[in-house]
Image 1 (cartoon, rainbow, N blue to C red):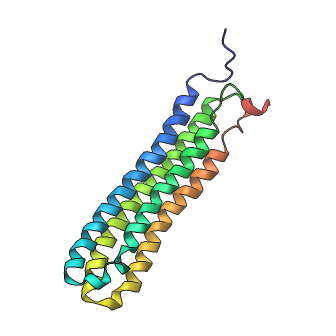
Image 2: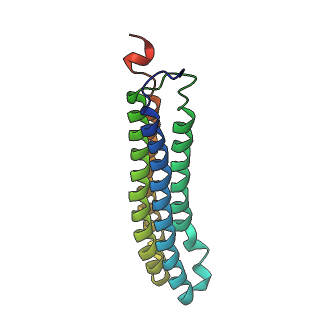
Image 3: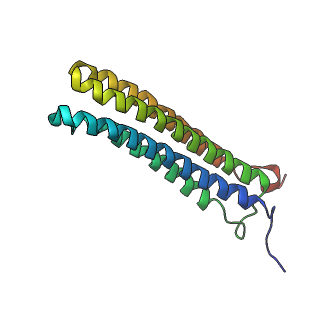
Length: 167
């Protein structure tokens, strides 16, 4: 006899959302780190004194993985079908939350990697480009932040269906 209440397949979608948030965000972070790191290494051969200043894109790319981790933890703590009913609505809310954060992190990581690579190389030749590069990187990072915010909002919708609140 099972004491499970709710839809038995719903947690699959919730856990898939948690995995998507972490995997896609980390893919973006890895791509951004690798692509920017190649630019830093190439630039460091010409101007080694600028290497520490040029690490900014690598750090910004690394933050993307943290966004995915935050959403994955929020989602996974919200999945406990033994304690509280977990319906398909909740699973879909968590899936969409994870996809929003993860895919935004992936796209931001690609943008940070491309801009970081070209930016640090250009900065080695013309130091006046540094501020412009940083501004472009900030706008690229903001895309992932938008995904994080939407992910938090969507995951907070879990548990608010009519079945869950007893209407």
